[in-house]
Amino acid sequence: MKTLIFVSILFCSSVWAADPPIYSHKSKGAIKGVDVVAYFGLKEGDKAVLGADEFSYLWQGATWKFSSEENKNTFMANPEAYAPQYGGYCAFSVAHGFTTSIRPDSWKIVDGKLYLNYSRISYLRWRLDSEDKIKEADANWPGVLKVCEERGNCND
Image 1 (cartoon, rainbow, N blue to C red):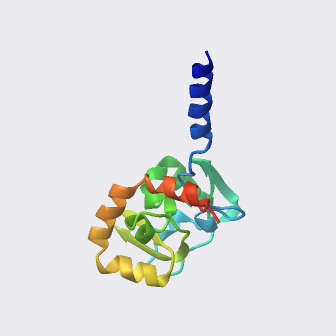
Image 2 (cartoon, one colour):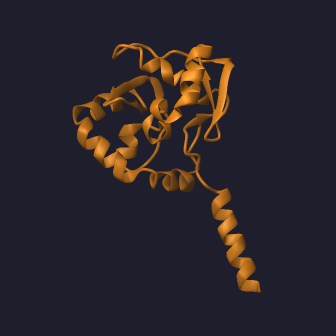
Image 3 (cartoon, one colour):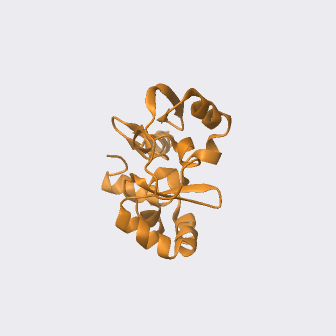
């Protein structure tokens, strides 16, 4: 019986300690409050569009904000099509086996998927060989979430 209780506690604690699958800022929400649907209408290099509290939607344990009711509804209809890769963590970092936060203006859409990066420098380095970096990050995801949990830095 003691073994069963120990195994139950061990299992439950690992479930409760699970990392957030979505990068979510403590006060701004998912992807620092940026409207992820809006990226798909921007030109490369354009600044990200901030969402508003009035157009919020809870998905995957994070609050997503949108700049309009239309964008919110678009996301709600197919969130996987608009949510950034690697939960919105920095694509360059995930390719290198860890997670970091992002800067919403360091972004690129590749093959219909949104990728975010920590800074302009990490974005430029990621972009140099984005095809290989995407393959590396795909292989590392979601295992890198364990690393951020161990470091205690999954969110800002």
